[in-house]
Length: 373
Ligand code: FAD
Ligand code: UDP
Image (cartoon, rainbow, N blue to C red; front, side, top):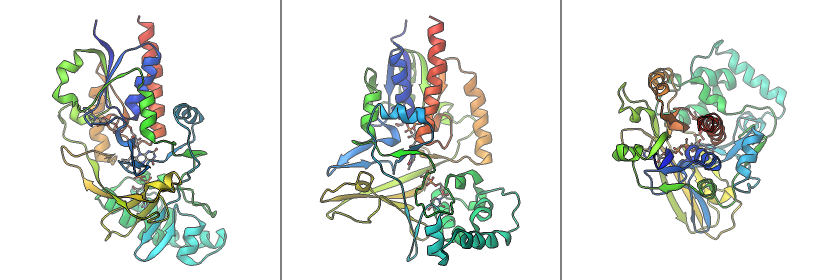
């Protein structure tokens, strides 16, 4: 008999949702994380009375009512709607691409005028079957939007030319012919009052958590304590990069407390010009309509990932997906190790998708466990 049913590597959202469901089913779990806090990348910390998103802006949005009801058990959500501003040189635009943006770009006022303008630009491109992000963007919104709002930001964010990136990335952004600055299409959206860390803390009630513990430095000893491992770290690192390393994008965050009440008047401002070294500035208090006397801002810089750096984004281009498939084949042969989350599954997943995946694993895994007892 081992001490725990599950060793869960990673106290992020995936690991915490799975741990919660397992504990509900009477299982014992040990959650470890190499960081000194729970929450993974959704970790928030209070500074000057403001919930600071330590690893970048996190806005919860989903179309899945089950997921929305699930998170609402652990927090009350406010009515924040993400409406970023884009700064391109000395020009300001609303995002996502909508009638406000088109009016700012071309002075057009009606959807028919905007559609005609975009259609005319698209027709010049002769792109029938977009093969990459550049072609996809040009085929969707034409040259002007691409040059001012997409090209520079994307090159900074991914450290690659747009034609070297998969088309799906740009499809994350809505394009609409209404005056609607809501960045997301989902019916449910908000920021948890009191921060995301509180959600994770509640999810982990009843679970033993050990922080500042790297799985790889203590592998044998940790594995010996549990029947099964749920691993939410990097899949390629788990196999000691035996087929070669997968690519990730890393980030650097520069956070400052400013002695003023309002710095930029909006939670998220994107800098779409390639010459500005950061991709975006977030002003945390606006996520929660804060009225504190001071403010906290974070500049987000994108960076090349190298071994030892934090891997924030998987780079799901064809070459990396092919390499991932090799690791995945090996992972599927494991009897006592399950891989999950953004890093374990090497997928650019938002929080709602991560919850769906963790709940789906819990459903199959925990039923299976119970049947075998
Ligand atoms: P993680 O949060 O990465 O957790 C994995 C944990 O495993 C980490 O804590 C890590 O320290 C730990 N770990 C890894 N390796 C080891 C090891 N060897 N030993 C011990 N511990 C280990 N989603 C949205 O829905 N809305 C947004 O607005 C949004 N904005 C985002 C902005 C940024 C900048 C980023 C990077 C992501 C954003 N996301 C957003 C996505 C969201 O962060 C993820 O969906 C979610 O955090 C993934 O949870 P996870 O548990 O899979 O991974
Ligand atoms: N993007 C862009 N301009 C912007 C914002 C986003 O070109 O002002 C592109 C960029 O390629 C980015 C992708 O759209 O990687 C997805 O943006 P999203 O805001 O969803 O990225 P995330 O918040 O996950 O970093």
